[in-house]
Length: 147
Image (cartoon, rainbow, N blue to C red):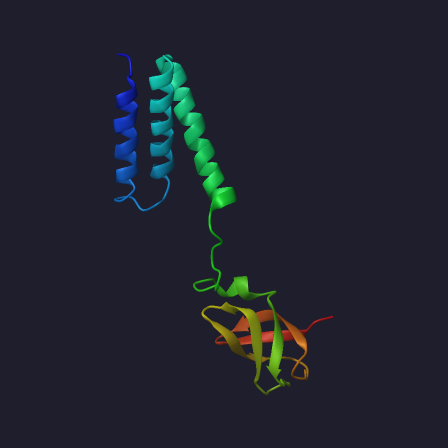
C-alpha cells in the first residue's frame, strides 16, 4: 500500500487533535511532523520507508527542540518546588537573626509563592547581609552567612 499525501495530512491533524485528550504536549510534534511529510510527499514522490524516516526524524527533532531549547522556563516563581530545591538559594536578610531568634530573609524571585520567609541561623547575622539557605526545618529556612 502506498501512502498518499492526504494520509499524512489526516494523520497529522488526528495527532494534533489527540493532544487535547492527552495533555503531555508531545503528540502535537508528531502531528506537525506528519503534516511536513504530507507536504514533502505532495511535492515529490518518495517511498514509504523514506516517508516514515522523514516523519520519525522530524518529529523527534521537534520534540527535542521543544524540551531542550524552546520550552518556557519552569517555576519562574518556584511555586510547587520541593524543599530540597530551596537549599542553596541566596537571599538578603530583611530582619536580624540570632540563635534561638527568628529573622526574615527576602529572595529576588519568590520561593514557593512568597519572596519573604522566616528564618533561623546558628550565628547572629545582621539585616542587610546576604545569606544562603542551608536547610529547611518545617516552615523555617535555616540560613548561613555568605562567605
